[in-house]
Image (cartoon, rainbow, N blue to C red; front, side, top):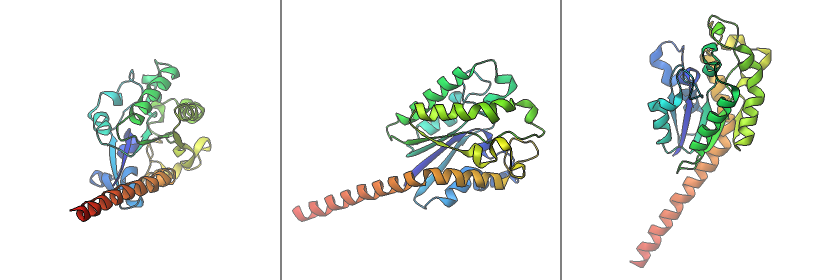
Length: 229
């Protein structure tokens, strides 16, 4: 079984899905679980409002979700945080703090005993809407692209371009977002899931082959031991 840990904020959690009881099915991790091979298990370690930076108002670092993700023995980790770090209320710290905390987070997952493949996802663009006044649109829609590219390069992880897939700087797909301009519709969550799937599917296949090889080795050892007996 290939274990995929999706870690993030409300965009990973599945905010806005109606009815809320269907969140496990229609959030992007829920959709991802349905389009990856059956031997994959996808986990949603997310909550509304979480931030990358430790000094922000709702850091992932202090949550049970973070501890659960670390202890989940993941083979693949998808990190998508940053939208809430761009809230005006969280801009007391500099981008260097964001980079430092993001680097530590990436490395903490890379260094787990399960040696997961870590993927860093740039969050979707911010569209005009009822919640957009809460955020620094320039930071999300312009500054984050080179910043996330730098983070991915410096930490030797693959960058998933959810930002571009969801309309990028051109804001070309407002129909994939709720009226708040921040959270995807169910169609938008599906686009994110497909974008993540396209990035991780090669790793999924490699992990599945590795697991099959391990079971083959065990089976052959059992056969050999029975011959000896």
